[in-house]
Image: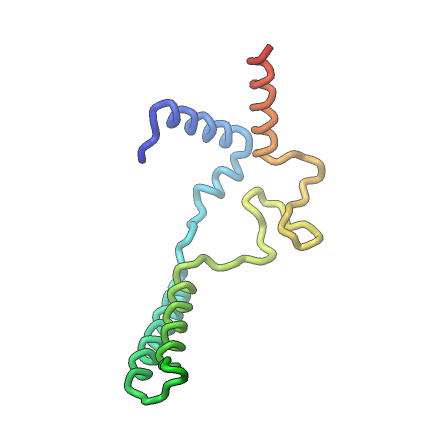
Length: 137
């Protein structure tokens, strides 16, 4: 669904505020490719999918069932599903920097160390609260 003119203007204002507040973060976000698997990841996923497909078809030919379930075919399906998920999902980057450039917290919970400086979203929220309070008075 396309954005209305008002929503588009608001989005443009937020984007320009982002560029004004933190140009380094804004440039890193625009350069970042989200969700694009590497060639190696695609190759591993394709090979895993083909192995799973071979297991699925081979399980139909082999006369081995457990409780009426063709075990080899079922495992082949799971391998195919896992390979597809591996190929589609972005890699998990532990210990990587967040988009603001801050390292993960010492507890390893992924919360950045800001040194008392509020984040961009916290600053935007406080500005919104101040504007809201000004409108009420």
